[in-house]
Amino acid sequence: MTEMVQMNSPDPSLRVKPHLPDAQTVTFVRHWTERLFSFRVTRPQSLRFRSGEFVMIGLMDDAGKPLLRAYSIASPSWDEELEFYSIKVPDGPLTSRLQHIQVGDEIILRPKPVGTLVLDALLPGNRLWFLATGTGIAPFASLMRDPETYEKFDQVIMMHTCREVAELEYGRQLVESLKDDPLIGELVGDKLLYYPTTTREPFHHMGRVTDNLSSGKVFADLGLPPMDAEHDRAMICGSLAFNIDVKAILEGFGLREGANSEPMEFVVEKAFVGDGI
Image 1: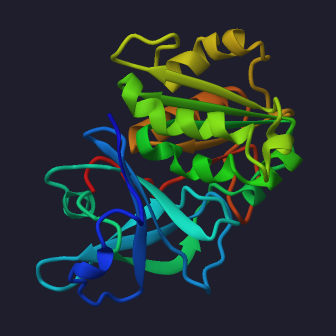
Image 2 (image 1 turned 90 degrees about the vertical axis):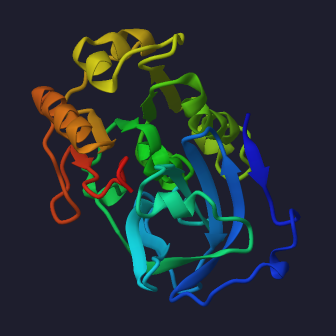
């Protein structure tokens, strides 16, 4: 079961809201599982960002000091609000508090976006691979909704691995909505291929991103050739161990790691927020 809270739920004006620096107001909250939730907040008028970038968000701690962590913006650069997708960690310094936010609450949002998961950091190519585990899908939720992604690439492949089927629901609903999206539906067309897998609960596709890439199973299942440096580009977002393992596999295919200052065949997000937040 998922739980949704929108602006027409309990009157947010009745709740006491402490003053926060760089405050933005929560407009929407959805709890996808006991471990995962997404939320939307107002967007600062001055904020400009490239799809795939992250910002620092947070709350005040018990001492009255800002407690901030890096969160990828899950909404595209054209959206009037900002969306975030987060794990819940019971004893996490930030998420133990953040998971209880409600519509009308305020969070801190530093309006200085940065990050490596941007289209500008990749050389031109034919296929773009998004490789993610868990909430690492957040920057790709932004990029999958950006028209530029489909203007630059002939095919876009979203590989997303979670432990259980329910943890894939955020990505599944997003992907299914894109073809009917009035803004980018025609651009998306048949270009977007979605390859979700699980590692613990039975599912029609199973296995880690690393295993499905190195074994060639994902290429066989999708009818695609193995990756090569001439045609394929990739972005990686997951835990530190995941990033290191996938990076090694991509380098085995002949792809090179790039950056904003030096575009190459793949990029890695080093500021991913993991289980300790």
